[in-house]
Each structure stands twice: as C-alpha cells, then as structure tokens.
Image: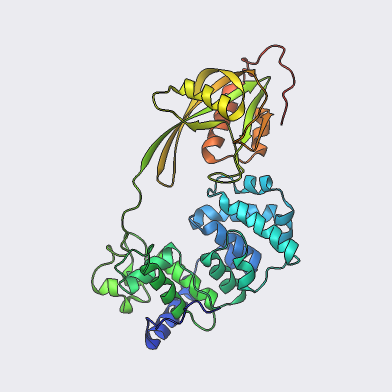
Length: 386
Ligand code: SF4
C-alpha cells in the first residue's frame, strides 16, 4: 500500500539508516516486558493497541488480562453480547473503542471465517480502524511496512526533526506521517514502530526528556537548539467548560430505575441512572423531576441528595448532583434512552456503567444497606421492564 502519494522524500538515506539501526538496537535492550509483546498474535496485538489509544500502559495491563480471559479468541469476542464486552471494558473509558472492537470482530467472523487477514483493504472497512490501528496491527502481526503516529512517536519525530508547527494540524500532520513512513526499515517494521513509541514513553518524555540516554541524540535538532521544551508546539485547544448536571435514582419496591444510553454519542450503550444538564435558574430538584418526566415518562417525588460526583470528559468539567426519588406513577417510555429496567441494587454489578455512575451505584448500595429501601411504596406491584 503506497501511502506517500509520490511526494519528494523529506529524509536522507544515510540518516534513515542511522536512525533505524540505533532505534532497533536500543529497543532490543530496553523494551519493557509487556503482556502483548510475548507474541505477534494479531488478535492480542489488536486488543492491546485499541486499549492503548488514549490510555497509559499501566492502566491497560490489568484490563488486557481481564479482556483476554473473558474473550480469549476473536470468535469468543464475536459471540459475546455488547453488554458483556462493555462490562469487561468498564473503567477503561472511551467506550466507543469497545463497541467498535466488538462490531469489527463480528464482521471478521461473519465475512472472513473468523480470520484476521493480512490485508489492509479489509482492515480499513472495520469499525474503529483508522490509520494508527491499521499500521500498528499489520506491522506488528504481519511485518507490513506501515507507519504509526500516536502521542509518543509524534513527540519524538517532532523533536528529532525540529518540527515547529502544531503536529495535530496540517501541513505538520501530513509531514509527520510521511517522515514516519520514510524511516521504516525493510524488516522488523513492527519492532521499529514500537521502538519509536517506546522511546517517547521512556526517554523522550513530555516534560523533561532524558537526552543523555537517548540513542538518537546526535541527530536531534531540538536538542541541538535546546528546544526540547518548546517542541512539540501545540496551539491551545478548546477552553475548559464547567457543566452542572442532575442525576436521579428512582426507588420502587426494592428496585431502582436503570436506563440504557443511546447507540450514538458519549457512553453509547452503557447504563446509567437518569441524568441530564441542569437548566438555567432551575434547582436540582426541579431538574430531576423534569428529566424523569421528559426522558422516562416516570413521575416521582424527589428526596435526599445522595452524592455529588465530579469528573472530566475531554474539556468538560462535569459536576453531577444526584438525588434519591420515590416512584409515584408511570411506565418507562423514552425516545432518548434505548431501554429502561427496574433492577435490584445487587444486580447493578452486571450492568456496564461509566466510572461516575458506578460511584453512584456504590453510594446507593451503601445508603440502602440496613434500611432495605425504607421509602418503598406500600402495595407496590412487581416492577416491569420494557
Ligand atoms: Fe528526545 Fe532528547 Fe532524544 Fe531529542 S535527544 S529525541 S529531545 S530524548
């Protein structure tokens, strides 16, 4: 697959040879012993690379073991339900990755007999596979000459070549991919890609790079010009936004109302207690009643505050104030949520929840322990599910 589009080379042959040789030697000596590096099985490489997008290695390791224990093969993953996959992924964040991985596994089992093909055209068709995943999986699992760019290799290459433009935007973005492709060796491509990332993770670190230990320091323009702190150069991103939200836990006959988020958007397919943004000049109690009415068709009486959870999603700082409420009337109906169920607190562990919602579930379980839902309605009938 020709990704250079016939552009003139940026790098010189002698420099390419030197950088390849030094990086590969350094990687052979300093690579970390990570669980996905024990073999080049494409399924394991793929799962690890999807998990590592936007997430630190130390965070990924226990999830990687847990995921492979639950779904040891591509066929096992394809046979699982989306809810099972999300539950195992819970806490790792960016849940769209898990949904896409699961859908892609089903696509491979259905259309390619469960094989993971050495064919970039097939990979391009899979949900969640962009240029990074394509290069990472095919270079490591099949030795294909495809480059990768992620945060670590981006930083290394920008510093090494003294790139002074924002690498997240063109033309610097195009430049980066071209340089990464030009530097690829003919053999050990997967090792070379990992070496670039590993150097960024261990030596060419964001704040204080360890240039004295760097195998390519002799060729580094940022070091020569003492510009390591200034490169990569990023233009400022969107400003932080403070968001106030209200959440509500409706209790009914020993059960609570749990709803499933829409198929698209943030936390797609995950479950939660009904929640939404606080309106202007609205109290949290008023917002709780409005959200229940508009999103679930349930009427309830709002009670005590349960918990306040603060969390950050991209540039949004969210403060979620959660209340208990007593069910009064209505049957779950929603144009927004995919599903709604009345579940016992001990059943909450089976549902995939985002980290703030899991905290709320735990707070609810603590709050209800010992008082057995004292605010349940006498004579309440068996709760229904939709
Ligand atoms: Fe990074 Fe320093 Fe190596 Fe340059 S010399 S690539 S700044 S660690």
